[in-house]
Amino acid sequence: MAVPKRRTSRSKRDKRRSHDAIGVPARSTCPQCKEPKLPHRVCPNCGTYRDREVVQTEEE
Image (cartoon, rainbow, N blue to C red; front, side, top):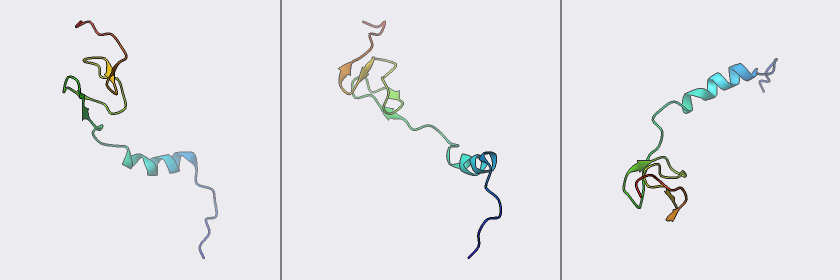
């Protein structure tokens, strides 16, 4: 069975793993205002998260 002679460095390991992270960030729609937002985050447009107002926005 093959065994590596040297430990893989952090740099080499992270370069190999970096290809999975490249791409467009996921988007979801806010249930309140129907605007696009990042998942698991407060909506920047209306300030709600999971059907509760968390942050007051300037629209109100």
